[in-house]
Structure formats: C-alpha cells, structure tokens
Image (cartoon, helix red, strand yellow):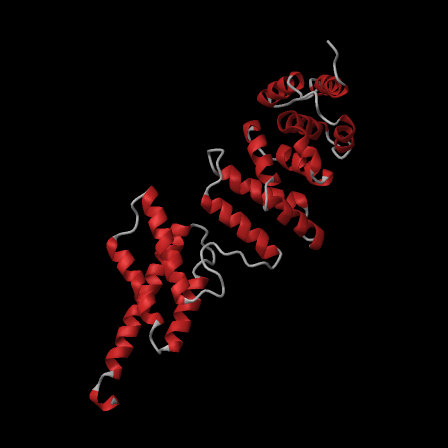
Amino acid sequence: MIITRTKFYGYQLKQKIMQQEINPFLFKAFCNSISSFPDDIDEETFFDYMEYNYELIDKICFFYLVSNLGNAILTKNPSYIAELCTSITMKDISFQKYIPITLYLLSEPIYSLITQIDEFDLKYGYITLFDFIINIINKNQTLNIGENEQNEILKTLNDLLDNNYSILFKPTDTLEDIFTTIYQKMQEINKKNLTFKASDFKKISFLMHLSHSDNEELKNALTKELIASEKGIYDSKQIIKHCLEIIEKYRHEFIAVSLVRRLPYEK
C-alpha cells in the first residue's frame, strides 16, 4: 500500500506526540484521522498551511481538522486557520467540539466579520475573537448553537465594525413595521411552544391604534423605546416580553392623555 506524504507526516506527528502528555481521547481521534486522511488533499497547500502552526499540539489539531473537513479548510486565510487551531487547543474543551466549532467559525457571515475586524481594528486579533466565541459556544452542553448565542455573537461582531445588527427591529422601523414583526414572531414562537396568550396579541394591537393617532410625540417615544429594547437582550422571546411591558406602559399613558383632553375646560 502506498502511503501519501501527508499520511506519512501524520505518523511522524504521532511519534512526537507519544513522547508528551495529551488527552487520550484526542490522541485516539488523531490516530484515527491518520488512517482516514483523504487521498485527494492538496499536499502543497497542506504543508504551506502547516508551516503557520508552531506548537506540536496545534499541528495535531490542524491535521485532525483537515482529515475531517478536507480541502475546504485550505481555502481560508492560513493565519486564521492557524490561530483557530491555537485557540481550540488552548481551551479546555472536548475534541468532539473541534469540528462543530471550526465549521461555525468558517461559516458565513462569521468568517467574513472576523477577518474584517482583524484587518481594520488592531485591538482585536483572531485569538481574542475566537476566545470570545468559543466561550459562548462552550457554555452550551450540546453541539448546537442556539438563537440566543447566535444573536449575541453576531451583534457583538457587528458592533465592533460599527455595523447595525438587528435581531427583530431596524432603526428605520415604524410602529406598523414593529407590529408586523412582533405579531409574526409571536406566531412563529407559539408554533414551537405555546408562549403568548390571546391577551398578548391584543396588547400589541395598540401599536396599530396609536399609529393612526396625531400624537407624534408619544408615537416617536414609543417607537424609539421599542427599537432600543433589543439592547443587552439576545433572545427574541425575551425581547418581545419586554416590548409587551413597554406597550402596556404607553397604552396607559395614551389613555390618560386622551381623558385629560376630553375634560370640558380643555375644549
């Protein structure tokens, strides 16, 4: 059987790593990755990328990732990949998360956002950004990234680029837009888990009622507060619940103003 240059290199790494302490589960996974290493890997590119990894454990990680993800990983920025390997091996995480984390960090728009931040802001390098994201992902016991984590990551990365990232509302939204967004999201959430009651749907109808009012001051104030409700909250369900509280507060204020205007001496 002919052994490719990359597989032979894998066996060389195995001999070196056996002289050091390494997580036994990672070691076993790495050994398996040697025998299953794809034959169609672009070897020249592979060894060019390998040069960016300095520590032996990072080389092991890179070999393992290429074995599982193939040539696709060799199309990304080599410094990005090398520092990704360093970030993963520095963290106390299960090797079972190596592939899901790597796939996430190579997916769009995450990959483009991180490369843009690294290019335009010297305060935040790859490892700093990877560390932030991996810490969020690692809190989750499963290998899935939930809506809350996804929104927190995307919002933070966009903030670093001074980009606006909206979870539900755009800065230019009107009360009608906000009503439509909340109504549709409440329906979507209720299909998965009965969360919002009929009274909640009735409560947001106030937005349409107020939108036809001539009280521009109250309309503008409510619109701004609803759009700002996303600040510091990354879960759509919690944002909507916060919005319902805001809407109720303004509903009482609107009723109070309307009653005062109807007093005889105001006519």
